[in-house]
Image 1: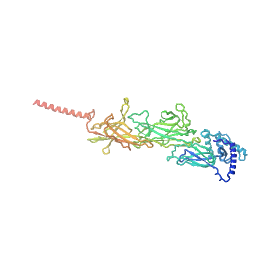
Image 2: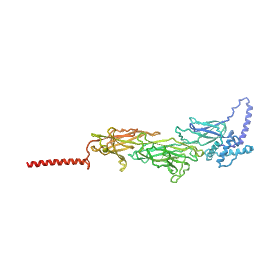
Image 3: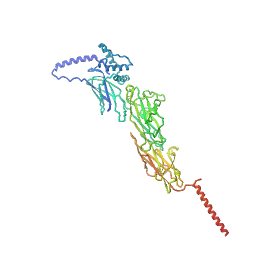
Image 4: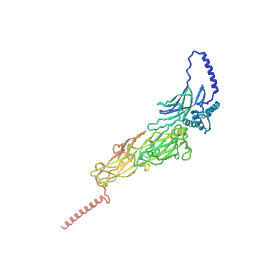
Length: 571
């Protein structure tokens, strides 16, 4: 702010010179037309405004100027609403020092001294970005509303962001942002601007920049192919596929506004919602990340946050009531949090029996709630739009047929066991690892016979008939690979689902062309046929009976042969 009384003497001299010049000019050019009247109002242009931003302007001091010389005065005297608001804000900002307005009947000298003290106190808060100035502005808007100071001008941003408050009487103004436009979901990623204070001069436009910022949230999930092995640093994506029982890693990344330094308190709350197919493992970790790329450093600050389980549909929240209070990480080392810092939350959730298979998937959303008002202690919050990731899972179905005979009895149905090839052998060699328990074929001749293996992800598998019904031969083992692609972006989706069959466990020679799965249900299917035939004999089973019958036949034949031989000898 310009010094109030700076150049007062110069202003007087300039006025005198101007008057002399005016008189002389009038004498010399008496017949010239009268000059245009001097402007009596000014305006404020607000930069960086968005459509829907709204502002009120309050005039607290009047102003007169002559050239570069500026003089302020009280509006409405020592007891006006404007003066009372100024005095209240000054006293509060200066730790309740008593600047007392004189009575309206006081002498002009007393009133002038009081006016000088008010203007000098306001001038002492100079420095748009100083902490004292921010405190004074916050106290001033509170006093303005308490004392019902009239709004002098209003403005709303138009589509291209231009905003002007016109026809303002010269003076000292405070500009207060009163509204933001949220989207259809009530989300708004911007903070309110800090209070703006500046001077309006007749005939001039005062340009001021909004002191606000933007907050964003990004949610990601990790994906990898178990058969290929989990990489050291899996990619963070918008979609993934996982098996039943997998612990799926998730990550939330929040940013801070550019005007973060203008806040005394800054609330920061992650809201996370998991679908019914995922069980939260309650293993949240929070980090402060500074720097970019390979140069980025992260420090754990989990102890500074509280994890709670709110009411449905949210699964949990991760809350810090005031980021400004975080000065150390969990190990006691100093930590820096500024407007370039990212706050990162990581946790896992397990795929459970409720996981949806196919294109519906298991969506998971999160949004960030944050302080949006750097004034009045940071009261009020906005929230980011929800960001969604999705976890897909699939189903493998054996369609069972029986050749040359009726289906076996229900209590003699075949059973199949599923194996997944994982790099658990020497030097990462793939080893067939059993997935779950054997599954018994169920169904009927009308609807077909099936064995289902739900909630699988991509990878290489083998399905083996581990219980063969009597009267049938064991079906050959089936080797196959499930593969899928899913899109990224705001609405990730399951794009393709295929199954490829191979001749053996080397997975080098295909047995047939890849077959498309059913995306809606996430189903891939194989036809496996049992051929009629005898099993190898086994103790205690049908094989033993066969041996008994064959032995008896041999004994009978031998007896007949012996009897014939004896009869011949007797003859």
